[in-house]
Image 1 (spheres, rainbow, N blue to C red):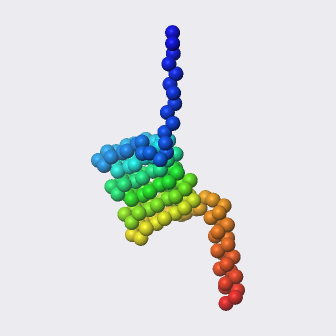
Image 2 (image 1 turned 45 degrees about the horizontal axis):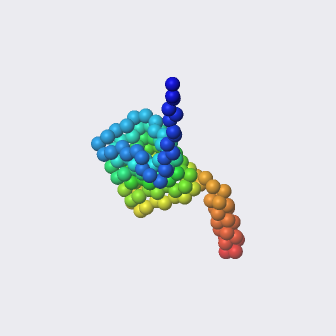
Image 3 (image 1 turned 120 degrees about the horizontal axis):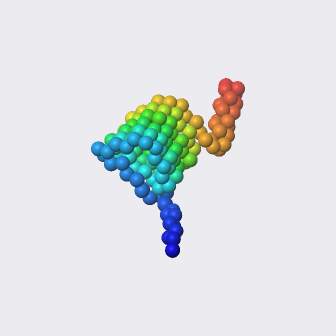
Amino acid sequence: MFKSKAIPVKLDPDTTDTLVGEGSSFEGNMKSDASIRIEGQVTGDIECKGDVIIGEKGQVKSKITARNVIIAGTVTGDVETKNKLSITSTGKLYGNITVTSLSIEEGSVFEGSSRMSTSIASSSSTSANAEAAAASQNS
């Protein structure tokens, strides 16, 4: 007679809701409203409204779309962030990136092409190109 209505749970993208632990493997696509940490192996696309963190022993073959991505392990596939991509000194990324901000530490590996996704970045590079052109004309 009475039907219970499921109340949708709103997850905080600042909390880690999903962990793929070391020694675990996952095949398939992942979608999450909260952050994801990967210490094991994942094959399949990842779409996350929070952050994706790939630990030092993490191995991912995936297209990753997230707010921020930190890579300390190995990622093979494209990465798109709304904010920042960080590749630590132990991180390896083999794929193309579309990001707003990029941090690559010494010792890391990045093989692919990069594209800045905001008009601020493109206007900054345009300004830098204009300044470089002006400097070469003054020489």
